[in-house]
Length: 148
Image (cartoon, rainbow, N blue to C red; front, side, top):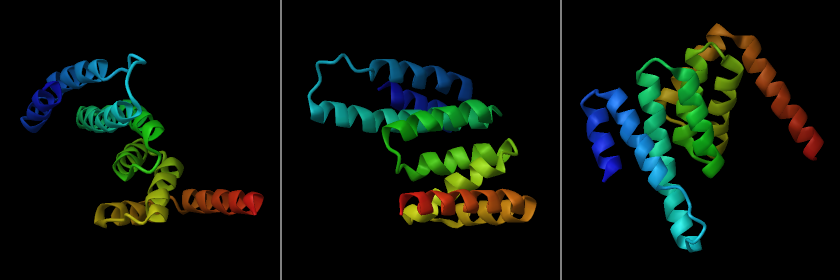
């Protein structure tokens, strides 16, 4: 119910009020330790949605650092959440943190869920900061070599 209210507030552009409602929804989704595995799984899915919407609100409010932190929380629940990676990548980009942005976008590419927005953002980073792209690629290569 709170999530629906928050979604409606977001849709109407009332981002500050939506942040409040999403925050209330997150509080209700906190584990009590008595849930079954299935209840925990469903709760985590809902937390992921709420966190992504909360991050979107902060991004719309011009607070990309907070939005990026919230996306990180969503990724702690599901490391393959491409929406969280894309949103966090956009936040990093907006803050001029091109290494972080490119790393997140490259992860989406590795997962296989690239879209036009991701491609466009990656091209923009390649144009603005080719050294960031090289750094991410070098780090990925070194990691693969260590794992081999």
